[in-house]
Image (cartoon, rainbow, N blue to C red; front, top):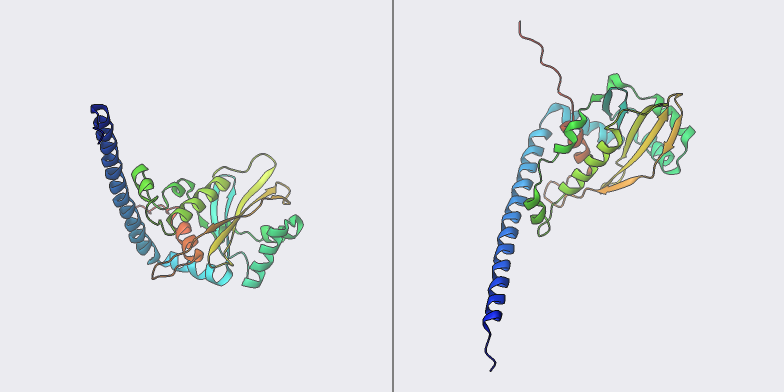
Length: 238
């Protein structure tokens, strides 16, 4: 039987140490990921109990369509610019067909006074901070809807974070919620003459909830809208 040399023992020792360190990091990451999920669920529960969340959710369930909008010096969210699910389906068809002229009437129906003002800096913290170790942990455990919510939030923010450029009056992120398993987001740009100048390809985000609550994309988009809502200034006490 061949003897194990000193170098081999050193190699085995180093490999063992690496495995121990890796296992430790994975264990810590797994626990961190669990904490992130728990914090998200606690936050969701708190947010979903607010009257404003419930109002947004009702609109989204009724219409299945919403948008985030960027105009000069302002960002806002709307869930009431169509009157019915049938009208929402027409908008969805227009977006998929990239029918610029047909979309104009819905763009003109945008009413900032009937909207929720948005603080775009809040998109980055919709699901809280996910550090390196938590990301490592999510390699070994399900992130549930967390990853999709974060990705959708980042995509919406990418569309509306900047003011419209010269010769543009408006940038919109339309969100179609006709499917109970995914949210479809489409970027639309409007020229300063009010005409729709471009409709980008839609991007789908799966938001399945396999937990007991069986939440759908409608619930999670309402959560995003509520989380990025601009807080109203508190009036000074008399």
